[in-house]
Image (cartoon, rainbow, N blue to C red; front, top):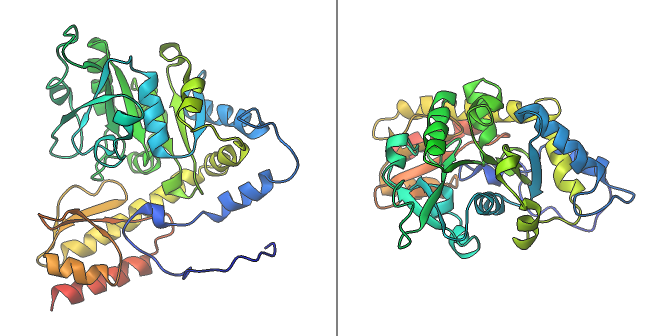
Length: 354
């Protein structure tokens, strides 16, 4: 390790269940960053690593796709949605979608987009739910629905099957709209489904995808992947306009190479999913704690007494999902261990027994 004047200011053995963003960088990704360091490479994406990233993405999603690395998931979503809409366009999404509740109004303020939101029982849209807002296309008094945006896996830890995505894509396209996928936890869905990722993305009819890596072992890297380049233009200009063009892009792109080249991204996601399953099994054995949604990725959503949650938060940090209802979210990461899960369960049992 190179010498540095910086000091370690945290406990490297500490684990939390608040977010998979709390996890650090996987060693192979860190090694890849060091490998890409040194010497000069052309800036703003004309480097060898970003060029190779196009081949990696083509291997996952099919020939002809285009990948645009960006800094973060909010930027990826806003750029992807802008690329699919006119100035008067609107996006249909689930009420709990990240673009609606967790991006600080960026799609509206920065993207100039109107969001038509739909309440869902499990975080997932269906053709029937889309139809609640898929109307008034020629009404100049109403923002025109042009895009349906779904999240895979969803904000409540559920996932779409390839058939469900295909049904949405076919319905969306029949209405003259496009399908966008927020893939902040795409790896967790792919690992859980056990099918090639293209089966529920490019082959199923998704037009533009936000490909997340930060939650799955990267230092900080996402990508907008255009699966249907014929339907999108000037995305590189949108990326610059949206302040998402990295000057030293090789350090974003090489992280994807480390994750994708030998399937590391799926192994990391599969482990995080397995830890969520272990957590869910233990939680179901504790009286007074209710699991709210099927555990299909790396998150467990539960309901328990407020006082228990507040005490437990002092021992293991996590967040309320709906504080009024007593709902909480517990996330597992690529570096969560069985011992971490068992320690959390022991603390939960203790607090519930008080």
